[in-house]
Amino acid sequence: MPASHLPLLLLALPLLCGAQSLDPVVVSAPAGPKQAWGAPFAVSVVEAETLQRAGALIQLSEALQRVPGLVVANRQNFAQDLQISSRGFGARAGFGVRGLRLVTDGIPAGGPDGQGQVSHFDLAGAAHVEVLRGPFSALYGNASGGVIALVSRAPTEARTQLALDLGSDALRQWRLRVDRPLDEGWS
Image 1: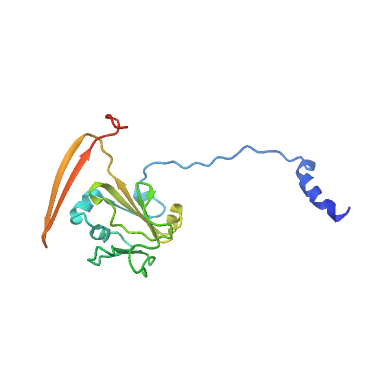
Image 2: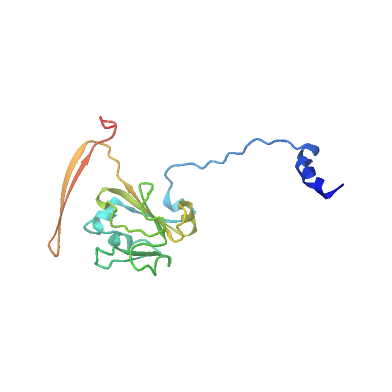
């Protein structure tokens, strides 16, 4: 047989051998909340109460100090934001966050090159902040150092809240929060 017939023979081989088509295999994973202590990866959750007790809800530096493997350098300079490193990733960043994926309510909050800042996170409206460290952060794409994900509080009832924070160095911060569930006339 000439060598030029070899590709045709390879294409016809499944037909000659009586190959059978198989049913498709569908792999699905359960979606939904899981207990952090039972997860097969390093994850920490900072709840809203912890965020509120940590400070004036201006920066994440106070609350993220409790997360193992994370170093948050608060430079007291709001123009450059926090420098966050997770297990060494992001330690050499000149400013901001690099090597970590920032996510707000499932929406990527950083640039395509991995550079991001956490100063735009709405800490007063957060239900919790999830911090994922280690190789499982690859589930979020190019996030070799980890993921910091803020999940906002969903309104369950119509209410209005006014809050005032007072602190040293003439800190005065007013917050107005108006909650209304979407099923009450909003579209």
